[in-house]
Structures are given as structure tokens and as C-alpha cells.
Image 1 (tube, rainbow, N blue to C red):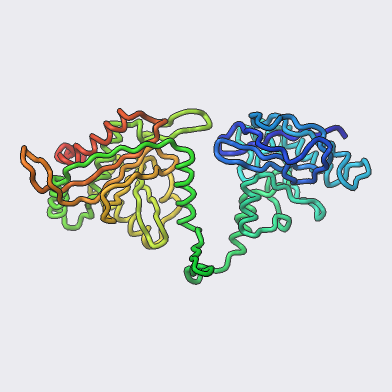
Image 2 (image 1 turned 135 degrees about the vertical axis):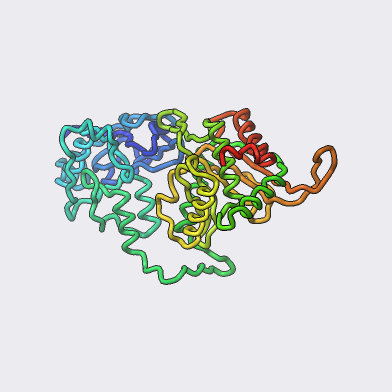
Length: 426
């Protein structure tokens, strides 16, 4: 049996290359199935990469510090010298090597478990890749560091799982199903664990999802923030007039700022967009799916109003109210919380003036609205008490420059001070 070349796997999420940080093995070392052989760094994180076959390391195809493309040779292993074989490949190791070659011929590039085989690769395959279950003596193949870490963090023994991926690999779904099956019934909220004087609160559910999202936003998006004070006296008056004309309408300040955002995105469509990092493209979206921050007992969530550009002010207010009620009652569906193209954050309800909002990944911008409070303001040449608010705007600097961001924020401020300009859009 000749040497088997293991190539850099598809690291998922559009990543096409990685830098070799540190080899964990040297030529001549004996490796086992699923042993970590190298640490690589992508544009997002440092990850450990395991090898799917056992044997003796015959060659390392790249030195530390080298940038390697996905699919390029990484390490060669002589499977004939696997431990305990006396020069003959074991059935287990031979099967693993053959499955790896089969995946490679099928065009999967040995995709990291948990991300799945790409559609393009599936189209290149002339026949389906079988999904056999490993024998009792065969170690389950877990190639993805993401899946490995997920299992470890939740105390899941991957050897006890039935793999469902191509070539008998353990998918992220397999681990998540095991986590769900092992979780105790949610009878009551989990009490914080106390360790001496420390209070440890489990980061899970909605809070964990939001934590992951804002962390990813900070890692990947080069954001910038600009802000301006605006006289909202007329906007407050407009809200009162609308509520007086239709007492049943649920039109508050959030609905009015939502309508202003929709009008602003029509004028500055560059901001209703996201960055496709894999294809190096900025994608402008024609529909405005408006997300808004809602605080609940379970944590911060961002419900999404679909096709907000088609709704009247009253319809927009009703939809915002409906989603807010369902968010507080914990009845939102996954579709209600995904697919947003722009987010509005009215943190003024907490009694604060300003903030630097974190963009809701993968969107390109977010408008923050501070409290509306009476302040001295120069109006018609005299200092008078007026209802003033601070508007903060955070944007992805890859999508636009300061001129577009400033233009959008100035448009929002002008509409706040002169809401009559929006009458035709209401």
C-alpha cells in the first residue's frame, strides 16, 4: 500500500486557506486514527486538524508559517506501518484510508465534519458516497475541531454515537442530537451555581446565541460609529396625533423610527446589504427585513419584520407590537429571528442617551436611538426646552464609507426633526 496523502480539509464558512502554526508530529512518528497532527490558523480562529488514518508519517508537505489552500497536500502517512500491523495494514485502517480516498475522488475535499459536503462537490460525484457505520473496533471519524470541541464541552463520548455522515463520519447534528437527548427536562430555570463567593450563570439558550452572534460580529466586521443629536419635539407630537386619531393603533416611537429607517434605506440602499466573504462581494438586498432589539426575561432577541418596505405606518406598528408580545412570551419561531437586513435598537427605553451598537451579523448597519428627554436647544434663534434624542449609527466600513453613513444618519435626523416630510410614505 502506498502513502496516503491527507489534504487540508474544507474548514467551512467560506474559508479557503489556513496558515500552518505548529506541527504536532514529525516524519517517522506513528499516528493513530483521529490524532491531531497540526494546528492551523484561519481568518477566524486557530484550529486543530486530525488525520483520518493510522500509520507512520512519511512527509510533511508544508512548513510552519506557510499558508496552505484548502485541498492542498498536508501530510502523507504510510498506512502499512500502522501500530500492531507487523507491516500489514489492519482492516480498520485500510477501510479508513479507502474511505478517505473515496471522499477525495468524490470531490468532497475531506470536508470538516459539521459543515457537510458542498453542493458543487456533490455535483462532481458520479456516484453517491456510502454512509457505512463503523465496526465496533473502528474509531468514529471526527475530523472537525468544531464538532470535537462541542462534544467535549458537553461530555459526549463520540465513540458511542452512530455517525450519519459520508464515510461513517460524525456530524455536528449527531453530537447536537446526543446533547438534546442527554439534557434533563426543563422543569424550572437553572439556579446559578455558586463557588465560594463566585456566582456562575450558565451561558446557554438565547443568551448563548446572542453572545456568539455579537462575538462573531466583533471578530469579522470592521465597524465604525457616528452619532448626532436631534430635536424630536415634532416627532413626539406626531405620535400623539396618530394615537389620538386612532386610539386602537399601536403606533409608538419604535414604529415611527422604523418607518424612518425604511425610507432611509430606500435612499441609501448600500446599507441594506451584507458582505459575502467567500466570494468577496457586497450583496445589496431589495427587500427590507427590519430587525429590532427586544429585551425579554430570556435575554435580548432580535425579531424581524419581513418586507417592512410594503407596510403602512399602522401595519408596521401592529407587526412590531405582535412580535414584541410573542418575544416576551417566548413564542417566536426561528424564522422570526433570522434573515434580517438592518436592525433598529431603541435603547432609550432603558433611560440612556447613547451607545455604540454592535452590528447584528451578517448585516451591514444598525441604528441606535437614545432616550427622548427635555434639553435646552437653540430653536428659531432662541434657547428653548425641546425634546432631544441622540442617534447612533454603526456601519460596516467594508460596505460604505463615511459619506454614505453620514448621509443616512443625517436623513434620519432630518426626518426626526421634520417628520412631515415622511407623510407621503406613512
